[in-house]
Length: 441
Figure 1 (cartoon, rainbow, N blue to C red):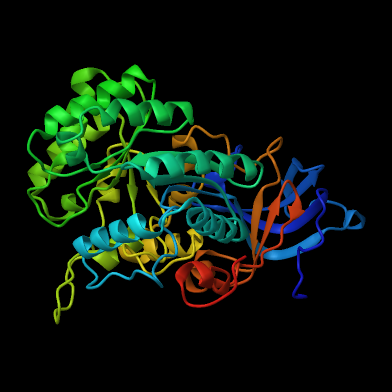
Figure 2: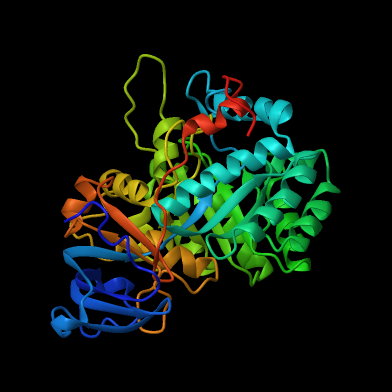
């Protein structure tokens, strides 16, 4: 097949002999969720108008023969940090630890995070994600004053500029211990987040008065009609149980909004009875969980001269068994919390499959980067069906083994049936901001 396969679509066309996971089809028929359904896809003026059995359309209709290649819906990334992205060249993590990351990022933010700097890096990250096939992103935004006065107005501008390409959601981020010294801050940041149409978020630790602070966060979220998204127990300390405290607070207050908890790594080292107690509460409270495998592999169980033993990822299989919505997401990219990554959810999904054993069977785990995060974010996206936008990612890989063995292999992204430019931005574009040469853009 020619190198420009699928490059000619202009909003109307046919894709023949595609394989689509049944779990992302709006109408899978009698197929098992783990099946790959062979079909022809017909779209007109950017909308899918027919999904027919493979090879059932007349030959004279033309179209692209995908030769049993996989077709997925566009991706949804539930947990990222666009504002931190790509600072690694000027502020690497000194020792690979969580504390090293926290301190390095804080110093870089204080010194460099001007409006121009944050915009350049956020735009760079968005261009990467878009080229890879992501259409929906939720980003956490460092919001300790005075950074909130720079980042939130800028985020709103970028969100408007990217509308129609990547739908953006913003979450404020601050350590919950900040409330111990700046109590009025919570009301101020909630008002700012509400005005921006965002979500309220904080990083929880086992700090004094944790329950008091959590109740304050929940109550201000209720007062401002805000959903919640927490960073939770990003540690391998088994005494870290703030996830349980969050679930208990949600149930005690009767919180009706959506809640997402990211990381939840401490569960992996806690006794089975503690895990069961916590996860039963999480399920009852309707909390969704985001696993961030690439970042936590880098940060956790690290010690000089010692090989890591533990993977630092949360318990997705046990959560799913209780009906808890679970996703995997990119998290940090090229910053002190994770020096690698390109906001490519196929790379993330591949790594998650290997690390978390999302196979035997593979089942419907592909929903963890498509339909499930989109649903959690309240967005009707990442489905394939008649009447849906022709927002598709086409692969030459014919099955999961080929895709997961070569995640960087050929792919073509269609948005509203139009082939997009998949050229990735050059890292040299950021040289000026990294103070390693280069011209000001």
